[in-house]
Length: 416
Image (cartoon, rainbow, N blue to C red):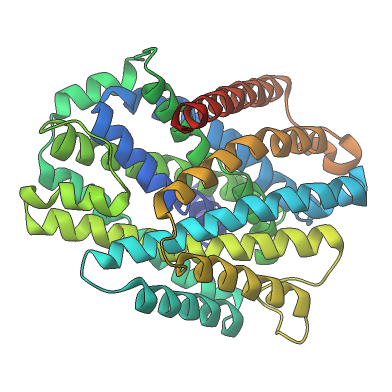
């Protein structure tokens, strides 16, 4: 038994990477802003949403990982083969637009975090873009994955900053399991935003592509599944501490809206220089981390879907479309942030809206694919798992419609 346990541990560490990285990068600049806003304006009340969010995230990520391990193909590749090129092309256009706004949001996070230390965005953003480009273009999958795993470790800064604020832990524990519903439009928008920013469409494409490129098969899938679940749980813990930190530092003093993640870091400054520095460092790390993953995910998705060579293990000359698309996304994403008067916060919010609109469609394709015996053999969903998955789709469609309604209402109110 001990020998078998050692074997499973060894396999687990051999497959660790795709699931953990994908879940952790979910806490990008948009996610940090959303969770910070939740804590700053509504305190501990929104914490209860993190439990159902975790369930939704595990369901989506587990299906992506399983399809990649069993079929050896990426999600966009399977959509093209099973549903045709036209459907794939339309999906690719929508995904590229959504991902581009996410990339802009993360370079906005780089700019706002370093502006706290009086570093101009005209210096920080180009340097960050160059670092991201060099890491992916000059590295192999193994070296890039090691850097990404190191970046996930730096998220511990949010846990430490949350502890330093000394929030009301008893109240935080109560509202983590007690659902609180209010008709306040701002509160509803925050609840929707927390779901939308936690289960983003690009994650499913990236995870499946990463599982395939790492070479994980059905034989190692059980350990890969554990890695996915662990990553989702750790992501929720980080989100919990972001909400708690802002609830204890900002809401308890004076509830208010925040401008961005950097504004949340400033709110922690009265509770000590370390709390402020750790939160700001976490924002910078998360923004650069996601600025690597999201254009990489987009390049994987488009090239797989349209039949072009892709992969970090290939050189520029072997996969030119892959690398040129990756480069273009970085140049456009970073360059847009440098435009004079560019609205950083509206871009972050807009990126989350697009994520919410696209996600239900991606989930529907995933459920249809994973239930095809000719594709998945004995690895199709169980009846219980299908119920959970379809409920997740229904919830996300409902949240998307609610988010669209609130957004349209807010725009009509703001219009002179």
